[in-house]
Length: 319
Image (cartoon, rainbow, N blue to C red; front, top):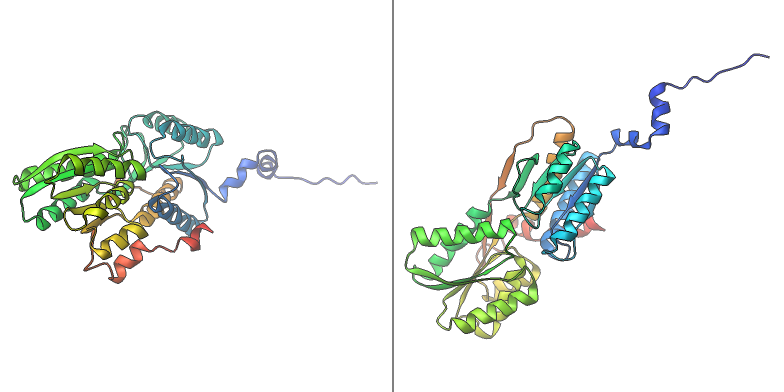
C-alpha cells in the first residue's frame, strides 16, 4: 500500500497557525473621535464608513461619552494599539495628553492619522482638519460686517485643551484686533463643550454684559447652548455660531442665529480613512491637509451644495 502525502505550502500553513495573515486582504482601521452624541461626530463616522467601503477596509469606531474625557480616550487608543489594528485615525481631546499614545503607536509601526484637531507631536502620519484658525477669522469678519465695525462682543468657547476650538477663538480674536479695533471682545468663557453648560455660560455673559452686541460660539455644543440663551432676547444680540445641527439650522432660518461657520465632517472622516489606507499601501500622504470652512447664511442655506454638506445620508452608512 502506497503512502500518500499532502504537501501544504509553508505560507499557507503559517496563515492557519497565525490568523492575523487574513489582514493582508482586509485592513483594520481604528477611528477614535472626541465624542459620540453630536451630529458632527456621527457625520465623521459616516464618512469613515464610506471610505472603508470604497477601499475594502474594516472600521473599528469608538469614542468617550464626553468630549472632555481625555482619560477615557487614552484608554480607547491604548486598546486599539494593544489590538494591533493596522492604522488609527484620532481626533485628540487634549493636544498634550494624547501625544504619548501617538508616539507609542508610531514605535510599533501603526500609522496615526490625526483628524479635526491638532496634537503636540510630529509622530503622526498625516492630519486632516478644517482650517480652524481661518474659520475663526471668517466668523470675525462676518461679525464685523453685521455690527458695522463697532460694538461689544463675547466668546462662548469650547474646552481649554481642545486645540481646534482654541484655534478658532484665536483666529476670531486676532482678526478683530488687526482689522476692527472698534469692536471690543469684552468676555470669553469656556463651556466645556456641553449643551447645558454652554447655555448657562451664555446666560451669565448676557447678564454680566447688558450692552453686548454680539456672541461668537466656537463649536456645536456652545452654539446650541448660546442659541437657547438668546431666545428670550431674539434680535437684540447678533450671533455667529460654529458647526451645524438640525436645531441650529432651524435657528438660522428663523433669524435667531445670523450665520454659521460650517465644517465638512463627512469629508473629514472620509479623507482620514483614505489617508490611512494610502499609507498602508505605500502611497505618498501629505503631512497636513486643511479643508476650507464655509459660511452658511439664510441666503445660501438652500443652495444644493450647502444642503449636501449639512444633510449627509447617515442612515446609508450607520445602519
